[in-house]
Length: 296
Image: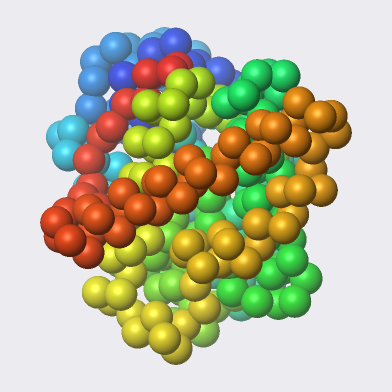
């Protein structure tokens, strides 16, 4: 039995595509899709699919954030494996099959798919999304997976073994801390690059900075739960700097090289903001629904 949870917030235009992506998967497992959202606009679209398919259920969350909603929902789930995704993304055919295959190994606790940008590579922000997905996240996870090293999951598409982690802390991004919690219990974390999830990313500077800042802040609170001096850390300014060389092999044209160079001062500015907010102002990550308008 597989439980698929699609968390969403004010995404009535894209939730149908997200649901259909899972309905079109070719798997033999018994499954249930649960759409969790706080707003009626999104849930009303999901209810139309529910009327046509008995394997779809609706969960109205109180609107306090994704981790808060998952903490309410997950104890109700009966599936051995829980698959998590978002209402503004959609998965490729057979992605679910590839994601679930690794759980045949009972030592695997978490598995993560591969985000792929659907934005126009010819634009500045579209190119940045491809660069960060491909030369950034994909290559980093692939390198760590080949070396059997620890890696974090992507919240766009990931899965974990149910019943191991009882609840998600609200001051750390769930796709960040849960793999650490599984690792602490002796489980392996796997990367399944064939499990592709298509994502639309920010298309203006304000949204880009805000999204990346929030993502980075979501990692900074890990030190509250773990001694990071003794644990592998995959998301940090130091790691980004160390692995930035891959960015220079990614451009195919002179324009793309200019786009690549333009990204570095922006990323430095974002990490400066993260340092200022978390270390100086003591404003840490908090669980909340935040809508990135330009991605919708």
